[in-house]
Image: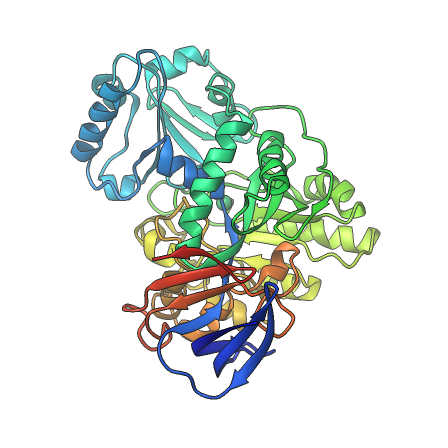
Length: 489
Ligand SMILES: [Zn+2]
């Protein structure tokens, strides 16, 4: 038995953090809690990031040019030239994370051709739904001025922009990622998450190679945190549908869900909305109607897999909820499906989501990092419903918070909770304690509860100071999974 002392804060059944002065760990599990007010370092249950792209975080930290936070086209130009010099001839220059609202302009084809004339370039926007390419990339992909836009996507040849499913045209000619690449990315991403106190997470979309990377890491005992992986059903650009994944469950790895995409992103004005975007106009891109959601989800639902569908605009959210409603009606099963992002639900969508008992998985940190885009593009009158976490909470939804990194830079659940409490676009935020508790919902990803109650795994995060009273000063100093330190500052 080992005693972990300090100010131990463990949420009760209602999510109120109760103080203890120590917890006891035996064989990786919590054996008991010692009542009383402890002092010193603060111990909390490890966080669950309910929607994150672990491998992409790792890829960005290793192989890609990280463009998040780049604040001008001049800065972007410098970074591209430097990377261009370092890469072997003929290889792709791949980057990710730009945001035109920060750049003060778009990285159009002419710009990329001028800065990097000698190799194909593909730069993914922060939302991952829009890609900027140069002429070499377009010609390798066989895209010309007359290439038609594929269904659910748009090719803007003159500007060198590929929206939504048009990415599939260029994806086909990119260097293939191997299982070994994926393993490297997952491990790099996992280290980054652990350093923020995240001890379990949901990998929000995996192709068959990534699934194999996860299975092999798990078999070799190399996964340092718990991961629930969503299998992608219908990849961009391919007409094929991937087979349903074989369900898999171990202490560290869970394959129990599938991912669908019903629309694009809000920050790039491609989420499917009922009123036109300001400035850029249009109603976004609806990728799935209720019927298609039903048809794609049915086989998974019948096999006991949960379905997690990306839906941001009110139109997309409505279609997905209708598809789910039909599933529950025609094939009743006690599975809680999920809506990823859930950016702009109206009152009817909130009520239907509540009635169906589905999980809503929003990203509070968007209120900070994508704020400029929201304020610029949001349809008239939609400010009050945009990631309105207080409204979701009052509507009685099952909520699980997440980062969606690397769409955002900040992975820290504490930073997300601070955004949820202080940065609502309108109205009141959530209490910090409540917001942080909503980063402790592994059930949303098919895991059992992990909240440091006796019998639960000893997955914990230790802060240097109280994150509730001093969120700015509190630093993660140690993280344990199954009672073993996996991160130490
Ligand atoms: Zn995502």
